[in-house]
Length: 107
Image 1 (tube, one colour):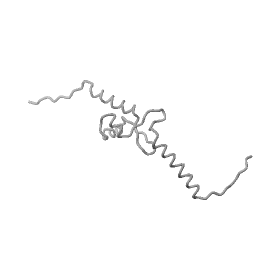
Image 2 (cartoon, rainbow, N blue to C red):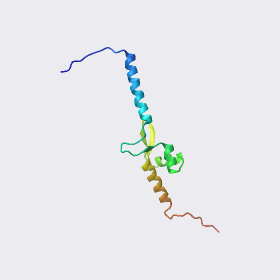
Image 3 (spheres, rainbow, N blue to C red):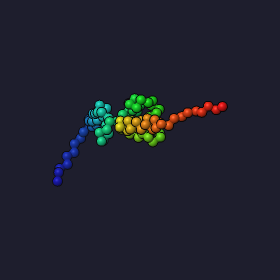
Image 4 (tube, helix red, strand yellow):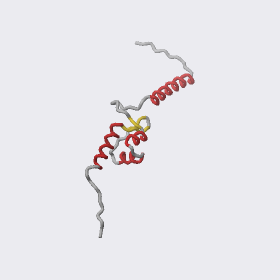
């Protein structure tokens, strides 16, 4: 059985220790490249739009339509690079299936 040792530590000292630990973790999170657990790169909404060559509203619409999945990391929305490429490659392919729209002139 281990002996238990109780010591008195001022509240301000404990507060400083905790604040330093929290600042260190936040600093590490902010400087680390965003990546998911499986190593796939995560992009911000703006980066995702730039990669796809679309506006931010188009990214939002793809999320709303269930085509893209957004991931939250620390309250920040991210998108997987591979999913952006897949979603927009597929939509470009679908739009080019030979379907044409033409308006017949009414006489």
